[in-house]
Image (cartoon, rainbow, N blue to C red; front, top):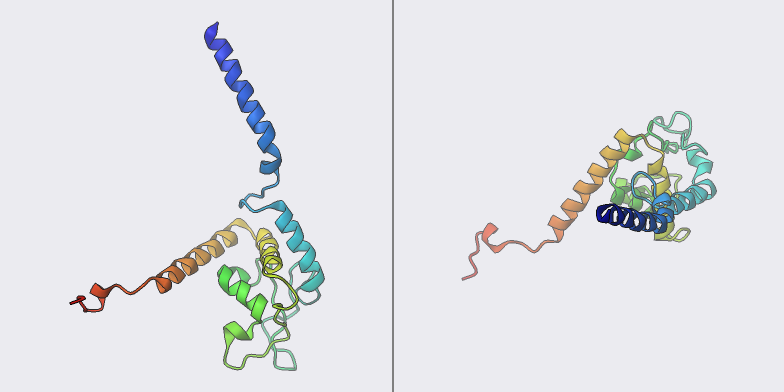
Length: 170
């Protein structure tokens, strides 16, 4: 009898905890990203990006061939494009500073830098929305590229190891 009452008490506590945490759990997507962030990103994408990149992230027609101006059409951001090949830092920088900041070599694009038009939080929300539309395989690949980018950034920030330079601190 005592075991039964303890079991029911534990179940009651679990139900209360789940009841309080359910709104938080329900507001998360499969990748652990806030549904509110995805919704914000979708709204901003529709306002700022869809004109060129398409309402359904489909990009402009013949996006791999130059326009008459010599510039490239807006690529798709769905799985048929190449956005998912790039780590988060590159996607963020292209959006904030414009493609020329990453491509270099005098590259010209019709895409503006959004630094003065969108906050960093808004840029991240748009990228979160775009990534939320990709199939699992593309999301995993892009997450791995982002993980490697972060790992490399940490290595680049690390102070040099004196023993690896041949100097022994004498």
